[in-house]
Figure 1 (tube, helix red, strand yellow):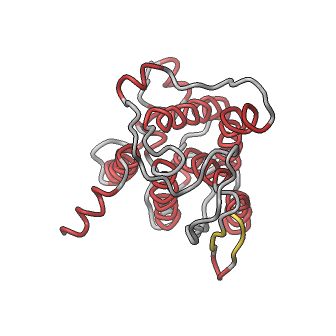
Figure 2 (cartoon, rainbow, N blue to C red):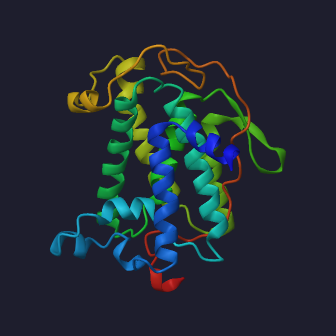
Length: 254
């Protein structure tokens, strides 16, 4: 138990809260403490009944049933693995900047979910973070299933293609990749590589509550103006698992 406690304490703070929420809400829904119908995103209830918690709970909740359990665990691993490495890598010592990235991606995904009537937002949110990590660490060699190895730059698209072949759906992964690309382009690529203006900046109120600190040890990537040197392997994990959580998914279809 002490080993589990030490591992849990080693998770970076923001990732830890996100991870705990993504474990707690699926099991709260599974054991019936709260009906899953109150945890997913219904645009009508959000706008007409002012159930404003739905965008947040829809990002943390995932229906855990025998046919989705493996997919849930894989994405939970992606959340822990890539969010931890971003928070302790390019965002090391800058919790306000990392939190702003999560908020920006989340708002974009919520807007997309409301427009497309998507009920579950966990996978797009995790994929958006994975995409940013892959771009920051684009030259790192990662391992995927069956011993395949390639640069991290291709990882989000490999996962998208793999899930499409296995489950016939790629909507969630594609949305996550596009949102991650939007953040990376506006925050890093356009102002640093292309010399354009900076459209995104962390609000000062976040620095007030999450001040930056000095002396952090960064080892997992850097902004594109300083091309990262490959420093780690692995992490591709397995993005597989049969699922069809896309535009037309309904809880009654489980």
